[in-house]
Structures are given as C-alpha cells and as structure tokens.
Image 1 (spheres, helix red, strand yellow):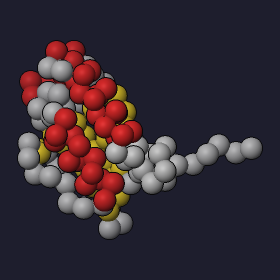
Image 2: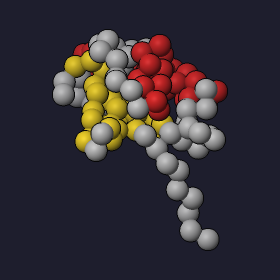
Image 3: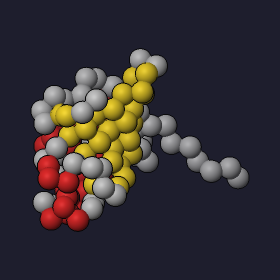
Image 4: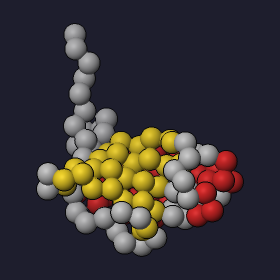
Length: 111
C-alpha cells in the first residue's frame, strides 16, 4: 500500500533554536499545534491544509520567536517571515494559508 498523501496549502516553520526558545517558542509551538488541530487546519484533519514544523535557526535571533510560511499562491512560491510571533499572529498566518488569502502584514519582514 503506498503512503497517504495529504494535500497542503502551505508550510509553517517555527524556530526552536536557543534565542527563540528563550522567548517562548516551545510553548508557542505547542499552543499553535493544538490550535491547528482544534480548528481542523492541520493537514491531517479532514479539510485541513496547513503543515507545522519545528525548525532550527531562521536567522533573526534577536526578534524571536520567528515564524516563516511557504506556500504556493497563484502559481508562485510565496513566503512570509514574522518576528516576535505569538499565538494570535501565528493563527492569522495559518488561517490565511489555509484559506489562500493575503498573509497578514503585522510584524512581517523580509521578502
């Protein structure tokens, strides 16, 4: 039997390196994972399309926790980078990713 393929609209990466961890990234990861599960946004839930991965350093150590999203939208790869991420912001990003709407501008930096 081949592996099951889950359709996704995007991938969230949340830094878990030392500086981000000191700013609450571990708790944010757990809270965000629970929220994705509860709201049925997680890719393995019926109708869910968002992946979440704990990552290593994302390079903005003084501004953590750092959240990054990659997704395909209108045939183009889109990315969003967020500083000082918290649960409300991370959920906004996850919902926009799932709904394929514009990413929030709050605390967004980079490309």
